[in-house]
Length: 139
Image (cartoon, rainbow, N blue to C red; front, side):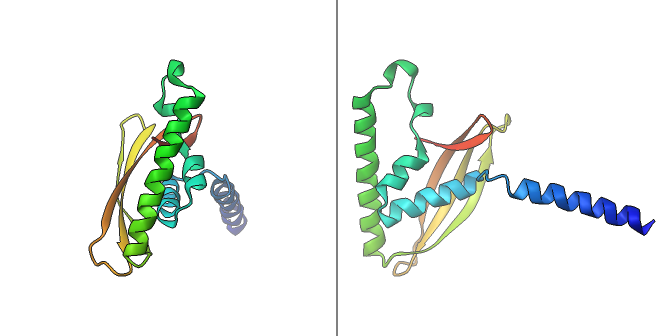
């Protein structure tokens, strides 16, 4: 009997390890990476994390529009970085709420950003879309 229990535990462990090593990031983690990149002034990471394709219709995808959107993301990154500097840097990013659509393919995650010199947290909201099994940040 103990051998059966050990075998079952071993199989469960294998499934657990394979699930944890899948590399798929949750919406909460992706959003936290985006917010950290914004407040650290890393516009190239912000642009890499945001999924522009899901927000644009097929006939609106053009290099000019992508350039405009990237410029807006860079400006938002500069603004967030300046806010972080004025408030002594980011102390902590905390998930406060996650709203999942009924089809489980869209969600919105809410965050509180705490700063070192300002007791008043900043609230941020990030929207996500699941495409081909992977969560993407929607612009």
